[in-house]
Amino acid sequence: MKLIELLLFLLKTTPMSNTYLSKRQFVILAFLLIAVLLRLIPHLPNFTPVTAIALFGGLYFTNKSLAYLAPLFIMVVSDLFLGFHSISIVVYAAFIFVSFIGTQTKKPSVFTILLSSICFFIITNFGVWLMGYPKTWTGFIECYTLAIPFFRNSLLGDFFYSGVMILGFNFVQKRYLQLS
Image 1: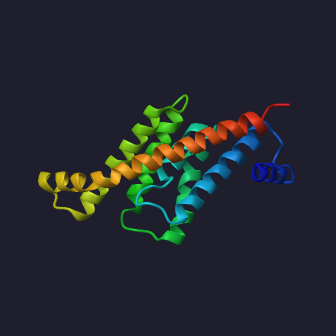
Image 2: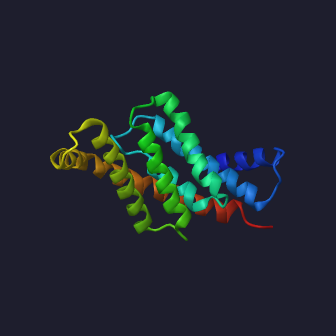
Image 3: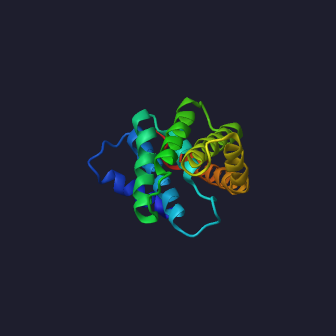
């Protein structure tokens, strides 16, 4: 909790207005940045906060531009360290769609996380099929079939990181962002 108190202290010493909204957006950005740092450390294959980042931004930013731009910006910055790939543009498009799901959702749910995971899987593997498999039904089925084992870790990571981010933010919001 010392980290949250430090972040809120830094917020008070910045030129931003000291309103509930600006504190809230600052904390949301802090959660997204922490999630990306977790992406940079060693982890199980596909057990990352990538989908959770986009969904969380879409769910909690009241500024819809930030809901789309913050997760993309954070992913581009982390990809500077991890490396860009030919599939990166498709991955970013999938993030935009997941952020859209978040912006259209009234509140987070297991269904929303599952829908985001499935959409991310479908979009990114469609890109993989276009870039690396024969453009036939057989190539299409082979691409998605070979991706299924990776989807298990993606689902686990999406539920874990979404849960941690959502529950953590709700805790911080109740504890530190109460309107005075």
